[in-house]
Length: 110
Image (cartoon, rainbow, N blue to C red; front, side, top):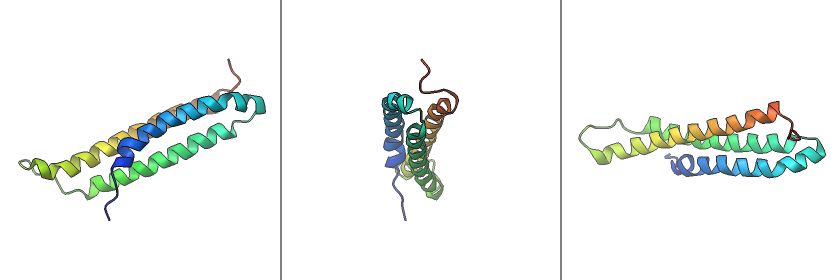
C-alpha cells in the first residue's frame, strides 16, 4: 500500500505555523487560569501528527526503488519521498523546539 507523501511535504510545515499561532493565542488564557495544559496539549497533538506524516514519507522513501542514474522519471518517486521525509523531520524539530520553552518559562512571564 502506497502512503501519500504530500502530508509531510505540505501539512507538516503548516502544522508548525498553525501550532505557533494557536499557542500564542492561548498564552493569555493560560496565564489567567494558571495552567499550561492547553499549551502542552496543542504542542503534543501537532507533534504527533507531524511525526505520523513523517513516518508515512519515510515508509515511501524506503519502499521506493533504487534510483537509476540515466532515468530521471524513475528517480522522481525516490526524490519526492526523500524531500518529504526531510521536510517532515524538520517540521517535527521546529515543533519540538517551540514546545521546549513551555516547560521552562511561565506563560505569565513578561
